[in-house]
Length: 305
Image (cartoon, rainbow, N blue to C red; front, side, top):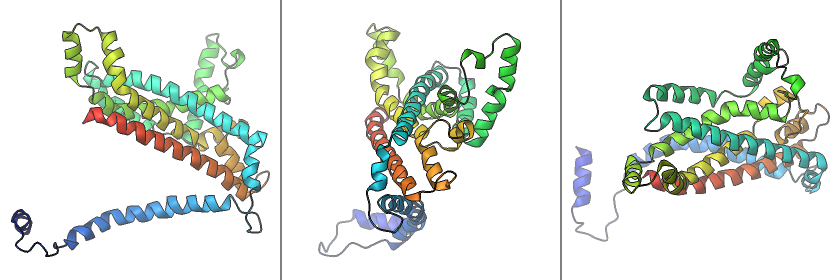
């Protein structure tokens, strides 16, 4: 009843144009009650740690300001770690985008099998979050030197490790990363494929366009921003991974997150400020990734309205 009266009062002309509008404190309190904890959580676990990393990267052991740790980022071992992280993230993101898009289109499109959609989305939701040490142990038990699949293929006359494959190398990490990259791409492409309207395909067919022409001139141009945005997101998802490569390679393959862990844990040397400088580089890369994703997703979302 009060809501109806408020709407009626807003619809009626104000006899006193100089009067101040009435403030609905209940709506403000309700918004604060729901948004306040989220803002507090973001400030405590995102903004404050990022600020601590930013300040710590430019401090020395005595608390003074220095650029020594930032200059150390140009040393060969850290440049190699950055190069390996970018290469690993880029390769896994591109392969995950291609394979994930093909899988999503084959199942989630209007011509795909309807009975597979729910199982695929359910599995993708679980597999996209299955990472870290459990994922590494699962692959070791499957494709390790004594894994089940390795032994099965060896009994058939195909020895993977004698033919150059190793689960604990760059190519092995790419294979492991694809386990959660492909399902994540399926989840991300589901809204974009739903936004690809049937009317566009029917209009193209009525105009005499073939399926290849439809995808070349209509389908792919519409999905291109979403594909690029999701590829950028896959890149960021792989770039910040720590537990999976650490469990598989034990730091043998230099990656930027592993270098940060080594600098902070003190297994060989302990230099927290150097670790913060390396983490600052990761924050910078992730910020660029999120900015690119936001801009590309904004372009792609216009076709889903």
